[in-house]
Length: 492
Image (spheres, rainbow, N blue to C red):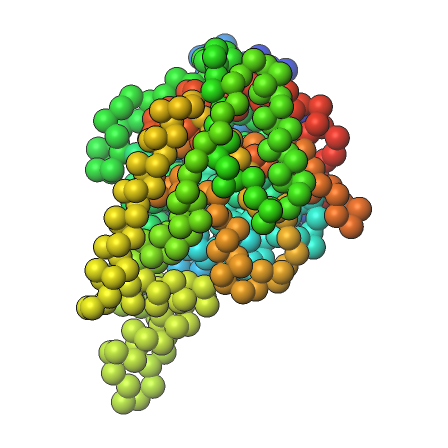
């Protein structure tokens, strides 16, 4: 059952066809064996997870009603607070931090019966697109360990792809769920901003961050979102809307579906096989009776520069609290050194190069004389980007395009920060506009004899996850044979 999707495992546990304890033990054993290769987990919680799983099995045997995720092993990205273990953001700055509370998303998943199996590594403070910027070492792609898994939710994507958990949660500020999902061949859902509480998510870009599921199937993503979503009084940015009920409708095709393909998304800058996957998806939709329309999103290329003003500016504010005094890494002072030196050394020792780069960028953007030229203008462009999506969605139900311009690349291949930032060219505008998006597998490219997943992205307007996931499920069914041709080289 390790490679069954979450819904199938949940059903097997509920009927007694599978044991929750055995499923958890198998995934923990696989993690012990494979994590030295993949570095997906920062830590696992064997004793606690097995105890919770045994309790689920006892309830199942006794015929007691089970919650919707009873006994399912789920991993949590390590920038999402858990009482279990540490919450480090894969940073030396928070290397010893233990949260006194669970994040709302974790709390709700546990209330739904999910078993927290471990915390997954990420690009430090969720700042990265490759999984290379973790203080505990890089995360490796289970399809080819010489290549990156994408980021920042690198460990969550690798763990799901390799069968080291049934599902995981990540965070998405500019593509950090969808891009690694694409590179690791899984489903990654970025919900509408405000759909899922951010309470307990360590803030990066507060107006962009969103928690979401990373799963093996679209129906699993729907079920996970149902269990996590809804208004949270502790987070003023959550929308005053009830929890979703998408699992009940996700198998229903969208009648009269209109699929828009932005002309900017099928570009010569993409790997040819990525463009071919988008074309195959369009052909599949057309064969199912959908209408394919051309869309126009001329501000696509402006999204990266807009994002890299707004996100670093918010990060410089959010990360100012890590000063080595209240909490976080504290440097050693030498005799005669002052408080300013303590702050500076603590932050330079505690934060890695990419985090320091973004803090400095953001501080510059917000400084006197530059605020109007950069940050204010970026907010104006943000409004234009949202208006651009509104016009597109007036003509179509969902937008189809690549998730990432290429399949997984080798370690160090995008050492230039600007080249790395362009990996998110098709994902950042989803966050800037506050809409929802999902990446799902669309076949493979072959490089050096290894199969590498290719993902396509669907986007829908704000709070239209029902339509988005139903359209994604249509494509997932059409691509079932295409995606079944290969499995990760490193897996349980």
